[in-house]
Length: 187
Image (cartoon, rainbow, N blue to C red; front, side, top):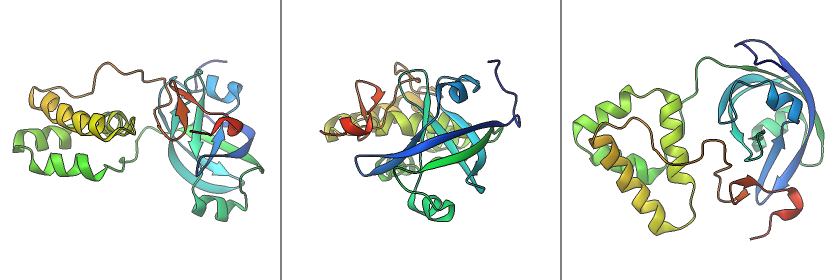
């Protein structure tokens, strides 16, 4: 399937599943193939007719998934185990990521040059920094990643390097860079 231009609809049905304490929806392979990247992709669309905007995450197997929070589940009348009808399109504008407290504090304490660089980054680049910092459960590794982020930005780097953008990086939902299957969500 050819890549989709912004605004071109991708329609599919998918079943929500629970992994760890999250409800997620894995896109069918045909839907993921219609996206322009194997990494994160900003989309907008509907699920059972209810509008949403999100950033699809890579599953580590050349596909994508999305978290479906409680508010969206309630609005769409769905929960884990239910099938849903989706209509999505690639969004040109990325939503701002939720910056974790430790990274936000480090940025606030950083020299103005680094704060300015952060402000100049595209939301997509900010998502990459946040994703890299969040991709570990180990507190020491996380602390080090926050420090390295500030250090790299101090030297003018606009993106983290050396991590697989097509891997699933949520430490609660992945193993070896791949999204867990619902039956595999044990730790």
